[in-house]
Image 1 (tube, rainbow, N blue to C red):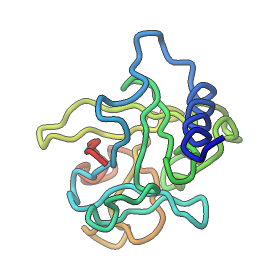
Image 2: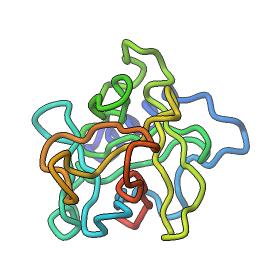
Image 3: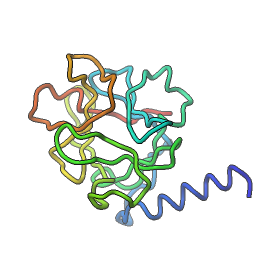
Image 4: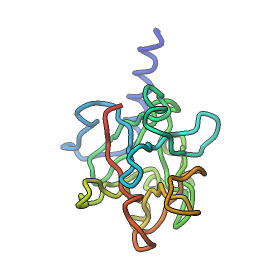
Length: 176
């Protein structure tokens, strides 16, 4: 089987087992794979680490063409998985506030399947929306450094909406 056919088959197999989405749910954004861009730090996108299970921020310019910064949304906006095209693993919440946002093989989370799911919050007036952990919708993917109003340089973590500034908890899908 050719490399492209095997890769497509792998994506379909992972997608089929990832989420039991309603029949009306979109299998992917209209443009296919996307980068996930932050609302506070517009030059930063969410990426999986090629060497471990962490997620990191990377500049959009450096992320262009990098499969570890490309995502496929599987499911509708109120309940979906994010498949990383470089790792062929899914994004997952590892617990509550301040816990890492990690990569896992599909259907392997010790917290159960809902830890591998996310939802988009409502649109904020700055044009972005919260990327919420479905396991605990009070927790959002956080791009802000714990040391100040700058992008994270450590692995990405979850944070509650009520804890400070919110713009760094918001994201958009942009073409990969």
